[in-house]
Image 1 (cartoon, helix red, strand yellow):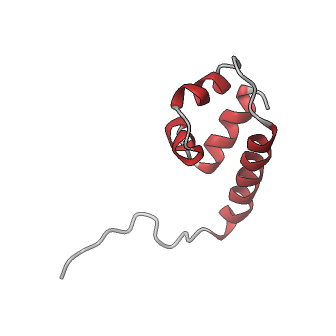
Image 2 (tube, helix red, strand yellow; image 1 turned 135 degrees about the horizontal axis):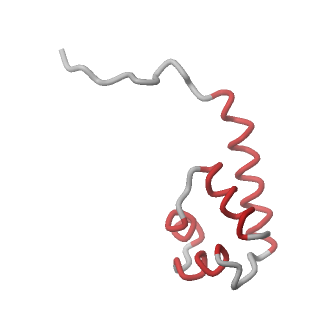
Length: 75
C-alpha cells in the first residue's frame, strides 16, 4: 500500500491518522511513517483498511440525506 493509497482510504472512511492510530492501538508515529512511505503498511492492516474503505464507499449511497442542514430546535 502506497502512502497515497493509505491517504485515500483514510479520506474515504473519514478518519484522521490519529483515529487510525487509536483504532489500531498503536502510536501515531507508526501511522505517520506509513504516510511518509518510511515504513510499509503490514499486509493484514492493508487488507483491513481496503475492506473498510470499500464498505464505506458502498454504504454511502444509503446515507440518510433528509437530515442535511437540519438543526435541533427546542420548543
